[in-house]
Length: 79
Image (cartoon, helix red, strand yellow):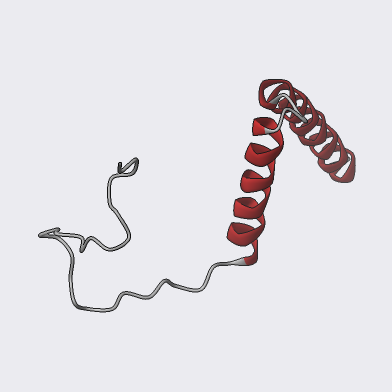
């Protein structure tokens, strides 16, 4: 009994498939770190280690705090 959409031995019959090899572009450091963090967070949430909603709430608060602190520092430099 097959549980997935395609079985390993089945060829994928897709009109959009191409014989042309497509390679990805080089990712920036930010893109790679962001992807790694997203995968880690999803993994931890699925395992019940963290609550992703709580995590997102705390991150939003910290980002806001950092943004305000940076704005105050820039304002002090102007004075």
